[in-house]
Amino acid sequence: MRSWARPRSLEFTVMSDFVEFRHLKYIAAIAETTNISRAAEQLYIAQPPLSRQIRELEDALGLRIFQRKPDGVCMTAAGQMIAAYAQEAIRLRDEICRLAAAVHRGEFPDLRIGFSCFVNPRILRSLSDAYMTLFPGCRIQFSSGDPSHVLRCMEEKNLDGALLPLPIPGEDWVVEQVESSPLVVCMKADDPLAQHSEVAAIELARKLKIFRNPESHPAAHKRLMEMLAEIGVYPEVTNLVATPTDIQWMVKAGYGLALIDNETALDPALTTRPIAGVHWTADTAFAHRNRAEHLALPILIRHLRKLRDAKPKRRPVHAVGSNAKQPYLPGIAI
Image 1 (tube, helix red, strand yellow):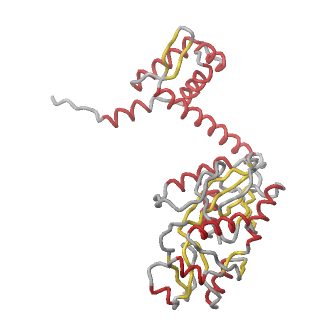
Image 2 (spheres, helix red, strand yellow):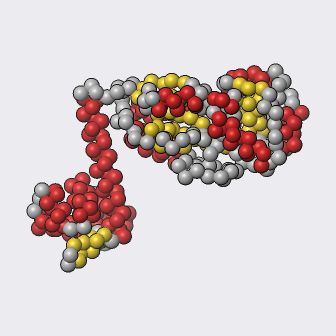
């Protein structure tokens, strides 16, 4: 008779299947109280069965979750990991149950999202698709406007969240970066600069003349001017636009060069080139008030974070300064 050794990966899967949701509740309660007796009281169960089930779980997993002491228990390193997962799982379960109950009662409000026209439409579609997948049958409303206007609407609680170019000024927002793409020079396809693989700063200084109106997003304009100054470019801000379409029209008409998101859909008469020596990005973020009032926001944001983290990492970008409230390197929208 030939013996068969169970693969370690399969062995762990079988052991981890032993973990039920009640075990996670037990672990979270013990981690919170650091005492099995107090945890049992909190859970409305007797202490001996609780201790027995934790020991059985530890034996099944082949590891110690708690270290027993005369005055209570403390978490092992492995136990700390499991407890963190347990607490998150319980919170997610409570959120889902609350959301499902609201949908059942017909009390689930429409999600109102503001956005800037400089946000790539693909990101809007991604947000809409994610929402419809997570909350089927629930409605989402979109409202466009300049970042300054959109932020005022959020302050007045007329919007639940917004997709906007970074940086987003103020301390009242939770900001989650969802997209980052290279910032490139937009020019006519027959421009002599198009014969080169990149645009030198000295050429950019002479011909960069088309900009988004600074009043529509003052923080982004200030950021852009700082970055340009670092490479010795001090442009004439002579042609101001309100939309990406206006930018492309002005470039085609010969009013100068512009900076755009590399993923912008281009007119066939136009092309783009990177700026020599720098790696700048146009970054987009989802923002909402510090206290997320719409029921769907916590789950939607976690989903957006997963989508962002699943994308291939880009090389580091050029940055000026930092912002503790917005941990990502702040990109710009011209």
